[in-house]
Length: 307
Image (cartoon, rainbow, N blue to C red; front, side, top):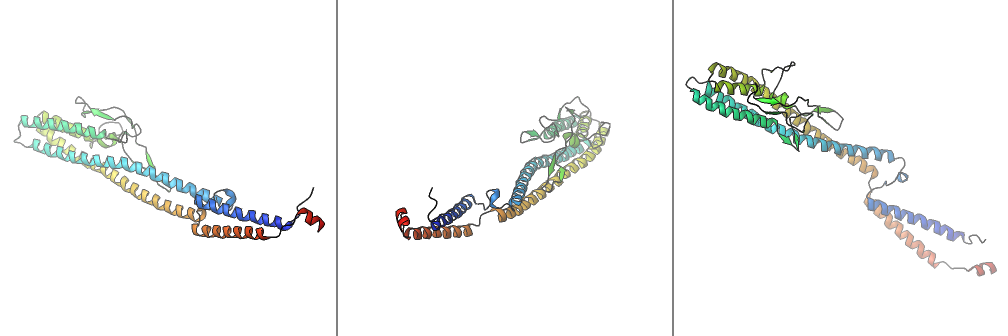
């Protein structure tokens, strides 16, 4: 077998292959936008690319989760604001009914209005967002309360539950984002008896006292309403604080994501200007090499053997 007869030509072909690989690598970097496309491109930096890519993905997921929580909390905050205003209106009407000049008929009319307003409070406790009941805690697919005029509180509690849903910031710190309708409107003592600040009970007590033309009962119910109103405002304050924390956590997650994206880009992304310049130089070298090779004298095998 005749081996290679032209070491110079072999060297030319080897160098040409290196240039072509260089051009192909530059083209890959430019088309993908990445300097590191596979582990062999930069073995020492692959670990950093993997970690930073994971960090960026986590920051994006945290943002998505926080934005979802923002929507739920914003809805809860808005309807609780309406509930506090409604309770103020109920107290005002109760104060009218407490007047010594009010007739039984007038108080009966007020009682009917307050019964309707109690129904509105129950509707607020059944608020939905994104297809789930905002105040149903860990059982979000059904409302926790319904109106029941025969009940001592004017409502039926359909089930008991807890609110354990947590939001997590980009640092992995979790915090509670909600409460149940029972926590807010039907506050109970540890033995499940009605707490003094129970909103449903306070409103229903006023309605009953007005309907019965019971002036002492109206006065007592108004005192209970004041306590319930203070408590409801505290629950509104809870959601305000949660909303602030969500806003802060989201802003922080966005800032951290930008930092991680920047760090990842410095390691992974293509320097377009530098690579474009390098590819142009490589293509020029390739053309020059091919042109030079084309101008070299050719010697046949016969000429070589007889020369």
